[in-house]
Image 1 (tube, protein in one colour):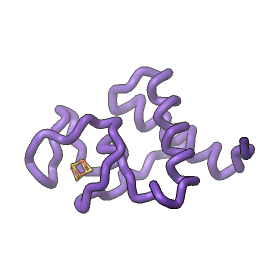
Image 2 (cartoon, protein in one colour):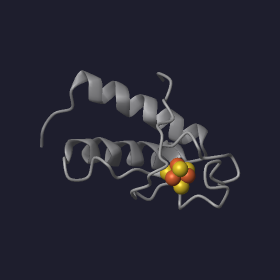
Image 3 (cartoon, rainbow, N blue to C red):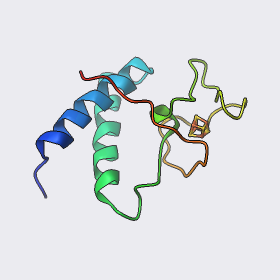
Length: 90
Ligand code: SF4
């Protein structure tokens, strides 16, 4: 297993904070942030995103872009409308 870099650790902490603010438990937020880190390292999966990472996800689980229900917010998928919700530092 490759050790995490300093940048990966910072990104992990920021993402875990974002995911917790968006409704995941602390444990689930950290688990998804780790999945995102592994996704980022997998060149074939880098375009797979979860709605919980997207700036269009609204509080009620709706997508502001499509004006429909978002997909399950922790499921990785390819979406042409995806735009990063930049997480703040933890
Ligand atoms: S634009 Fe796509 S990825 Fe973003 S919230 Fe809507 S459905 Fe999810």
